[in-house]
Structure formats: structure tokens, C-alpha cells
Amino acid sequence: MAANPTAVVAKINGQSVTEAELAAAAKGPIGRIEAEMAEKIYSTRKQTLNELVDKRLIDATAKAEGITPEKLIEREVTAKVPEPPDAEVQQVYDRTKASGRPLPEFAQVKPDIVRFLKEQKVDQARKEYMEKLRALGKVELLLPPMLPPKVEVSAEGPSKGEASAPVTIVEFSDFQCPFCSKVEDTVKKVMDTYKGKIRFVYREFPLPFHGDAQKASEAALCAGDQGKYWEMHERLFANQQALGLPQLKEHSKALGIEAGKFDKCLDGGDKAKVVEASKKVGEALGVTGTPAFFINGRSLSGAQPFENFKEIIDYELAHL
Image 1 (cartoon, rainbow, N blue to C red):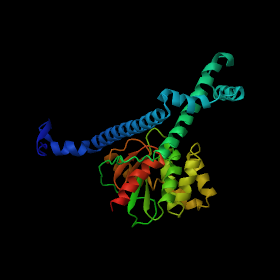
Image 2 (spheres, helix red, strand yellow; image 1 turned 45 degrees about the horizontal axis):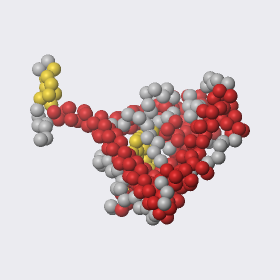
Image 3 (cartoon, rainbow, N blue to C red; image 1 turned 90 degrees about the horizontal axis):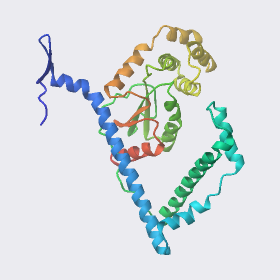
Image 4 (cartoon, rainbow, N blue to C red; image 1 turned 120 degrees about the horizontal axis):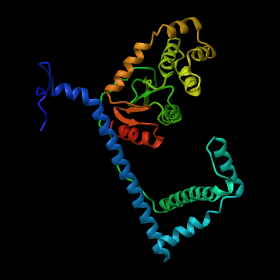
């Protein structure tokens, strides 16, 4: 039964807090929890489906050859993976030690490194073998994509693509966030793969524990006033360790941006309110971390692989 929006859920010095006020305030956090739960459930279902498919393929192949599934995997995968050469083992040890991590003597940890390397290669060999079996078995995965419920998302901000494109992707991001930098190549792949079908909108969401992110966001918008938003956007992500105020001004000079106007915009905080407004929009949608994407209003959180974008985009295009 739906809650009565006028019901009083709290009183403060005689003033009431209604169910409607509570629902509005909790909408973002609850939406985020529901999206996270839906994603976990879907991920578990998809992983389990893949395991079921792999088991069926292995069992059928082993039965046809008159051997056990274990013998089949031993013959086609494990036995074909050689022991890693000493030079490779030494290289892993040296690289790990150079990173500053304390390690025992090489001879002491060599068996662990050998086991680690071999497990990696066995996993890769198994994956390649299963791809071969899937091709021979003409496997089709028909599990529908995970489709978070649609929400209204304000698509205001620097954008790429036609305004009339059938799919709009809004990203809330932070120039100091390593995961946001990592997903940049995926976004480019999405835009290249779906040319003419995607409008991409970037919204500022500097996280409070990233000290340089706020001014970096402002700098990109200041550059946008001179037609250089995307050039600054790419430069900031390429130089995440150089986002201090003096460095932001150096970046603008390197891009040929007129210094007087840019410095005045950045030093005066002209874009601070724009960034804050963008953050409030994200917070109302339940965004707490970056990157956070909304594909035609469907939430996709984190630096997801291309395939996860593709699932939702293909569904949206197929249901225009």
C-alpha cells in the first residue's frame, strides 16, 4: 500500500515533517541503493549463466570423446601451459620490489610467483578454449541486459553529438578521479561505434576529497568560454598530477587560450556556481562517486567496460 504523502512522520517544535518530504529527500539515496542491488543481482545471474553454458559445453565435449570433463580440461588447457621461464619470474620479482613493496629473498618467494604466473596463464588458456567451444557450439546468450529504471536527467553542459541523437549519455565526472580518466577511452569507443546516434553530455562532479578537482572543473568551463572546452578536458585528464592553480593556467597557455580572460574567469570563480549546480543535480540523482553515467536516464556507475554501455545502448536503439 502506498504511503499517504500527507502523513506526519516527525514533529519538531510542533512543526511537521510529512511522508512526501521524506520521500523527496530519500529519493536519491534509495535510488542509488536500488540501482546497486539490481546491478549485483544481474551480474550474479549473468556469471551463473556463463558458468552453466561452459559446463554444458565441457560435459558434452568430454562425453563425445569418452573421457571425463576433468581429463578434457587437463588435456586441452592445463597440460598446454608451460612453466614460466626463470627470466619472467625474476622480472615479476624485480618489478614488485622496485615498487617499494618489502619482499623476502627471491629463492623464498619464487614458488609463489611461479604459481601466480601459471594460474594466470591457465585462466587465459581456459578462456581461449571456451571461446573455441562456444564458436563450435553456436552459443547465443539471450539474457536481456540489465535495465535500471529511467530517471529524468538534466542534459545541460558541454556536449558532443547531435542534439537530436536518439541516445543521450550524461556523465557526472571529476578531473582528479583516476577511474574517470580510465573510462575516457571507453567513451571515445562508444562515440566512434555509434556515430550520429549518441549525444554525450559532461557534467561536473568534483569530489570533496580531491582538492584540485573543483578548480579543474572551473578551468575547463572557463576554457569553454573561448571554444576550447574539450581540448582542456582532454589535457586535464592527461595531466591528473598537475591540476594546481598555476598548472591550470599553464595548460590554458599551451592550448592557445587568451590568458587575460581565462585567468580572470578562473581567479574570480566565475564558474563556481555552475559547478555547484551540476553537483546538486547529481546528488539529487543519488550520485556519490565518479564516474556516474545515465544512458537515456538509465544509471550505469563506475568505469564500466564498453560491453556494458553497448547492452543498454543497443536496447534503447531497438526500442525507439
